[in-house]
Length: 367
Image 1 (tube, rainbow, N blue to C red):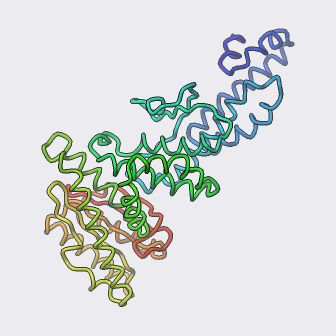
Image 2 (image 1 turned 180 degrees about the vertical axis):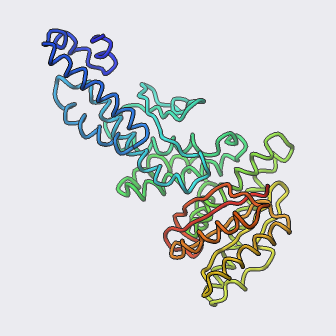
Image 3 (image 1 turned 180 degrees about the horizontal axis):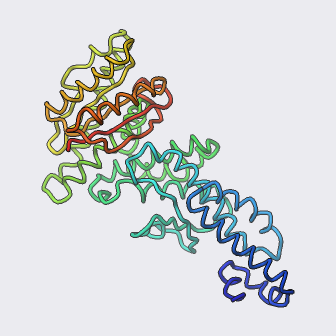
């Protein structure tokens, strides 16, 4: 039993010593291994524990007797850091996209080494500069996570650009000191392969300033890809993605021009509040808190009912961070007073439709 425990934790060199210990100390070691197993279990659900483990292992790894802990320490440091950073953004993305990551060490590094069909496992090669492993793990984790079951239908330029854009956004937010490393080591080589990515990245940057990249764009092209998977429309995905992106840009342009004139509700043409596409259709509902809250809630419920009558299958409801409480009331009111719509997702926004930090969003889908 002792041999099995030592082998499991990479401490087989201690087996002869442990086996000669008095019974009391032997039970002490067994308790230590049990505690370690319990902490490892918790680390699967709480990424910060993985980072804490690395702070314990790394000093020990510097000791000659514990050199075999080095890889485990570095693995915990990268795994905990990446999971902590990425899961902060999980609530912005479509439900189920971002899950905790596991790391495996490999001797050779290739695209195949990073991917596994059954679970999110990132396989990376040990290198001296662990910052490279961090930015690499973020990138390949997102590459694996984005567009589950529709990845092959999304045009490569948009798939690559969405992963690169989000990777840079996460790294810049959580480890800004690694932004240049990511751009040199990951972004630049991908741009060299496909220069079209630069134009797409610029458009993503623009619509993300008001929260439309994660809230609407990613969700809509994933929904379209899911619908066309087994139809002839599959070949139309590049055109459909371009049309969705253009619609969002036009909507934002009219909104922003209206804000400058202090009359944004009148500046957006009626046809831009919705998009009736060949595969899916969607509409926008922007919540602004009125002076009379009660009547204001009813006004938004009525707009949701109008969307149903006009055949809008997917309704995106957005609220500003400063008016989150009122936005919550509107979302709940639509959920209970418009039974034709089902509330399928509530999500956070990095920026609201006004361009402020934070925000709240919800997606209603026609039953």
